[in-house]
Structure formats: structure tokens, C-alpha cells
Length: 283
Image 1 (cartoon, one colour):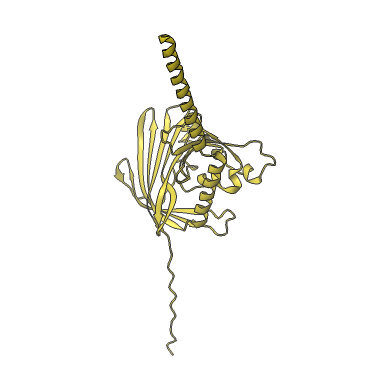
Image 2 (cartoon, one colour):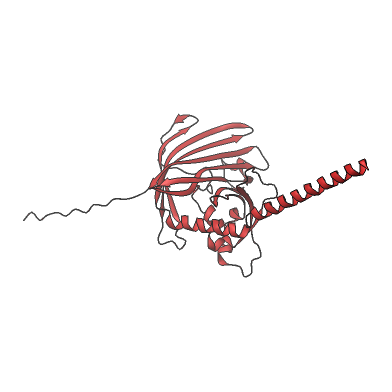
């Protein structure tokens, strides 16, 4: 009887534990965000950003490092003044970026640079259409959003999604056919409290073909830009904008790579002031 009594207590404890686990699972299920609703809200916030973001100017610090055969062959640093101005005639109402060089160094030595050129022609700034392409109303439907199978975060308020281009939407929207292959796949981190995108990591590859003397770097490259977003204040309002963009451009068969990092700071509204003066007639 004593053994049976202990068995009964153990069984009762197991039932209580199972019930507790079941309630925990149900509670977790109830608090788990609805994916469609989350994406819809993020899309709404991105649309508001696109609509309300004013023309702005900020400081951009760019560092570029080229490595060949495990040896750094050149380091460049640019301090730039970046202007982003809305183009009203553009159907997508996008921003046009322009840059002025404030200072530049090559291998630690100051050089005179009047123009900034990206190290690779398709390296775009953090204000290109990455965020808008994935979450604009017109192009967001071109993608499939799925929770990442191995989320790279321990934060409970962050949702990690794998985003892939839907190859078979019916019918095929014209916007889907125009998406650049570089934006065909990405991993996206979403802050579930703010319902804002905090990180985008694109996943793509490129083939480079240069003529002499740069032919030695020709070949296939892996290319995974990472853009980090954070709230910044512009003219008294907060906007989630890029704070850093990092790119590892690595040759898949060879010993050549380019590392590229942009850091953005000192955001403020870009305004032009026009003063009209009249010239009085001397007579």
C-alpha cells in the first residue's frame, strides 16, 4: 500500500506537471503574434515613413577595406555629407541621394577627393529601396514571409523572418517582374513592440567582370548587405532610419574581398531658403 501510495502521488504530480505545461503552451500560443497582422502593421508603418519623411541631410562615414591573399592592400575612409531629397515627379516618390566629400584618407593619409564613388558600382547606400521594396504595399505581395527556422536572436520581442520572392504569384504583378535580383531573398528582424524593421540582411551573389588591370578580381562573389535601423529624430519627429550598413563582398573562388561599412549620424531636415529682393528704380 505504501508503494501504491507513492505511485499515486507521483502520477498526480505528473498530471499536474503535464497540465501546467499544457497551460504554458496555450498561453505561449495566445501571446504569439499573428504573422499576417504583424506584417500588415509593419507595412503600414513603412508607408507612413515613406509618406511623412521630409527631405533630410546627415553625416555618412564610409570605411572600405580591400584584402587579397589574406593581406589588406588598401583602406579608405570617407566622411560625407549626404542629402536625400524626395523626387515629386517619380511615380514611386522615391528619394534621390547626393553626397559631398568632407574628408578622405587612403591607408591613413589624407587625400583630396572631390567626388565619392562606391567601391563596387552596385553598392547602394542605406537609403536605397531595400526597406520599401520588402514592405511597400505594391511589392510586399511579391514576397513570401516565413518565421526563420533558426532565429538568430534571444530577445522575446524580436521576430525573425525569412523573405523570399514569390516565383508564382497569380496573376504576376508588374512590380514583381521589376524587382532587382539582389532583392530576391533576405532575412528581416522586426521589433514586436514598435512593429518596425530593425535589421535587414540580404542574400545574393554577383558576377564581376572587369578589364585589365582589374581582371584579377573577376569571378563570382557572395554579397550579403546588412542594414541596421533605429529611431532618429528629425525636426522634432522620430523616424526609423538606417544607422549602419555593412557589406562583405567575398570572392567565392579566390582570395579577394571588399569590406564596406557606412555609419549615419547627425540627421536633420534639409531646407532651402530663397529670398526675393526687388531693385528699386533709380529714377
